[in-house]
Length: 267
Image (cartoon, rainbow, N blue to C red; front, side, top):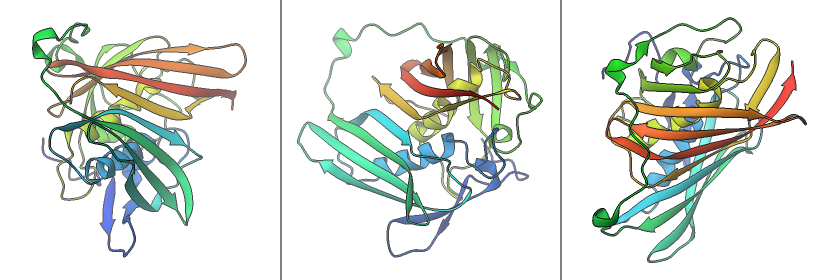
């Protein structure tokens, strides 16, 4: 899909001797605070670093966890990745995003050797109805700030941003992750997976904060294509904590699961 010329890519690449430096544009800013990034784009940028970290044929990323160490400011960021625990069949990778020398996100991912289990594959959830059968709906509810939300083409099967309860939605990026690059399907999936707590918004954003402290994706199959779907459900507990559980999809079907922990506070 061609990028919308009225919107900026999430990141502009900068020259630098250490790691990879990027400028995070207004397109990354989330619905909570005008000067902070939604965690979807920076999570995808960490996934990009993990995909490029000493890649080997015959392996796949099977689990990715992004820990949110604090607000992620818009502006210049640096990303680094390394193999933390090498192995022939099982490897642990690590990536980090820093701002001004301070770590704001850390990620770890298991990279596993692949094999042929097609004959015994089982347990996938039924596919979501395709994007063509979902309801296109742009715009933002009251209290949701512009930026990131406007960079996705949303098609809703259940709920909407700001509607309490379960949310099931397809989304497709209108912008590149990094300028002049085509995002990988896994990068696209990370952007949408972190929108689970927005798709299944439990409370009125004008009165409550429900921000995620992490994002975990477990994948049994690599995603393909541009459209990514999440079917999410939120639980808010009695002591200011919550959880979001999501099923992840591409147009071929079920590709994995996501989870987010929430800090819930009145504004």
